[in-house]
Image 1: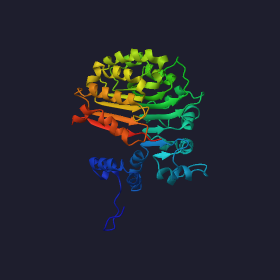
Image 2: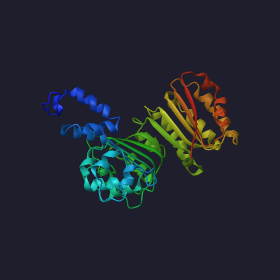
Image 3: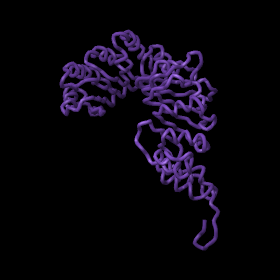
Image 4: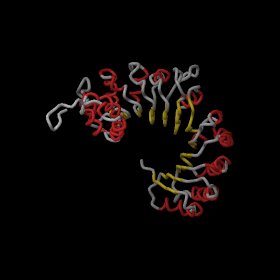
Length: 365
């Protein structure tokens, strides 16, 4: 790099104080364009810039939005450097697989991997080269249906440094109960979030793993709630699961909530008016006096279902005295403009509390 006098200044990380460099790359963490520009400053800044560029990668679903990277890769055997660094945080499964084959050193910079792509999980289960994903500390798997031949013991073996795992709406998983699904040697626990409709096989395997600490759980088994009572901060109740056939499961889980010492968030999904008594039973659990956040997703229209209106009124009486409560959110599936007003009109006690945020949102298809 040339100075104003024409002399050459060696560009090195050692030329700037460490705290200045840390500040520069902290700024780059929120801007791909900045990180890409820093990677061109000098050779010494290339590796730190790549650490920022590839820190978090999202692998798109099969029918996800088209993007420049996946479109540009369609006719090429391998990605070139410009295409890979153009949109490094959002790529198609095809691109990720080619990276693993042709430029796996770039994947060694990834610390957070998010995907809703079945092809990627299949690749991780079969021919993914070992070692290139060893720095990943956070993994998100959501909205997928796994094929029967996916070996999840092999999938999780790629992530020995994993510290956080989020699994949401994951179906079709078949896992042998004989081996720990997180069974590779680990230096610490994996904090797991199991949300929405998760395959019972995967749910059970992760909940019973000696390496897992469940912090968010879709309540399906009472023993899982009790086993992780010390770490559970959020519990989801997927109400269609607790139909007449599984009503006894709900009845056994509700009193077990009193053992959850750090529980502060409750999410109740797909609530119908016929389940009003179950909802009221759930909300009267003593442990929930310390609850800070409640989200209720209704499965019906208040204009056509008076039972939902009565349930909201009953919830208002139960929730209003809760001193720790900060947020109450309702999600409704209909587009009637009057429904949000109906909910708020039937919760007068909560509306009077200035320290509680009452939100009503309309679910979009």
